[in-house]
Amino acid sequence: MNESKKNPLKTPHIYWIVYDDFTQKLSSASRLEITRELRKMGWKVTLVSIGADGLQTIEGVENYCISAPAIYLLGQVMFHLKAMLHMWRVRPAPDVVFFTQDSLPYMLPLRFWRNLIGKQRPVYVMDTRTLHMPDVKNETLRGRLRRRFLELMNAIANYWTDGQTAITTRMAESLKIPERKLLGVWTSGVHLDQFAPAIAARQWPSREEAIHLLYVGSFSLERNIHSLCQAVIQANRAGLKFIFTMVGSGEAQSYLEKIARDSDGSVVVKAPVPHHEVPSVLAQGHLGVLPFPDEEKFRVSSPIKLFEYMAAGLPILATRIVCHTDVVGNEPFVFWAEQADPQGFLTALRKIWESMESLPKMGQQAAAAAQNWTWRNSALRLKTALEKGLELRTL
Image (tube, rainbow, N blue to C red):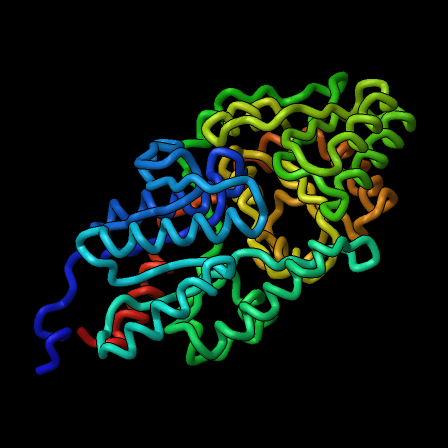
């Protein structure tokens, strides 16, 4: 009998490499929460990220941090050399090495060496969560190099990894991941208990009060936040009452702050907060907004904030693009902007204003729908995918 069937692996060990500083990334919840859930399921997860050397606890999740100089290419090289050395020393030896495109150049030699010496483990699996698609007209030399690098890594991964995972099926299709390589997809999710207090703390507006819109995330022009700002200013000039608060940071911050200064208080920019404080921020709002344009990098995504808005009991204002409609396309708690421009948002804002009395009920519906999009459900999908990868290589 095959040894892997007779003695199934009871505690798989995942060595998960992420070239990011989790203390600086709003999107770090995907790695931290999935690590937490996989550990609850009995799996050993060594999560490796950028930070002061040694074990660190971030958002209640222990991970191993590796320092790296803040120099673009040198930082990557130093980080991965240290990670490879740590992976060599860690016990028990990893069964799965899980990584992104940034780590593929360093993982391929290890995979080839494993095959050369006739070993079956570890299994090398690449995960893709985002597409790099800047505005080509304004793309810098570094941006062009980054885009070409990622294109090359995705092409190599389709042939030379043991398997791949992706954030959505649409992402896998966009990257043309071969069916034989695609182990599974795992979307973003939410920790329901973490966001439930926002529901109880919220005060819904009366007809005389302003409706508070909230955006939590990265500030960049490509995310189209400025178009919604313009629509909010127009709505207030037309006699409606809206306040749009953006919480985050990014390259468009100074531009958005200028819009806010000229908005008579209807647009507000606030500094980013640690992830555990996001529920308190969402408790102050009445709708969560997702203003992304209809572009490929957004179509294939699975925005964490959509699920967090829902779990916090917020109705949603969103553009009608597939990353949103795939999740809440038929839900009654969404106000759709048919075009991702100020006029499209202004039309949606008028509908929101007319539906003010319905917002509390819509918030309840959003919270109920969030039950289907937990981090545990996402972790189960990832667990199934990695188990498939392990089964493809016998002990």
